[in-house]
Amino acid sequence: MGRVWFRFYAELNDFLPPELRSRSFSYEYNGQPTVKDAIESLGVPHVEVELIIANGESVDFSYRLRDGDRIAVYPVFESLDVHEILRIRRTPLRKLAFACDAHLGKLARLLRLLGFDTFHVPGISDAELIELSKAGRIILTRDRQLLKHGGVTHGYWVRSTVPLEQAQEVVRRFDLRAQIAPFTRCLACNGPLRPLPKEEALPKVPPKVREWCEEFLVCTDCGRIFWPGTHYPKLASLVQVLKEAQTNAGKHGPKP
Image 1 (cartoon, rainbow, N blue to C red):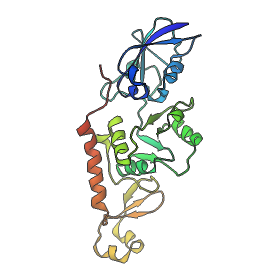
Image 2 (image 1 turned 45 degrees about the vertical axis):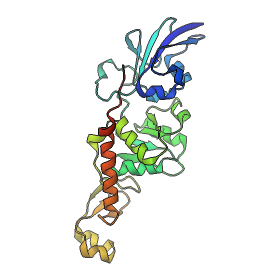
Image 3 (image 1 turned 30 degrees about the vertical axis):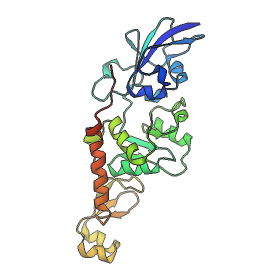
Image 4 (image 1 turned 135 degrees about the horizontal axis):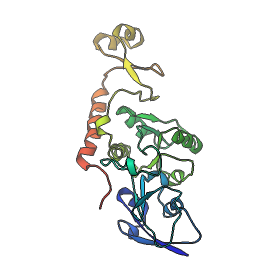
């Protein structure tokens, strides 16, 4: 039997029991497990990990534990460039394309409202989500077990159960505030929106809209036409609330 010492940082502590959070603790093992096996046995999905330091050196998930190791485990860094010491994956964990599981449809719509490429279809299976992860999308889910699947390369466990708070959480977690581009994606299908000349839009919109509206957008995928109707002020207010989420809460990052 061997023993190593672990320390998890920042939001990775959300996965640990209270007595192990934000402190060094011992971990006993048999055989020669990889550091990935040990991390996930402690409840932390591997896709939430960006950097592992073993005895002062960056290692990847295949590193095998050795008696006496001291291991620090970090989540995504948002204000520090760790590219030169990154050993876990060739490209950073953070991507600007998401895939929401079947239960996060409202979150998907809010992220689309902000302009982020967010795939979601009702009833999507875990197998389909895993394939989307392999293609570079970050899986957003409340299912921790899904994120522990060996085929998942990008993923994030959404902590909140409230859609607006979930969207705020994602904006903060992935440092997205500066990249918000509202009203550039279709809320229904996720397709990009483009301006539609008034003369092309008029034959396809309700008569009352033709009387006052001058600006239209069309989805390049499904063909839906959008205009600033009575619902627009509410959506604009939502965008503002989501923009302010990071300013009010600050950035997440590794804590000493």
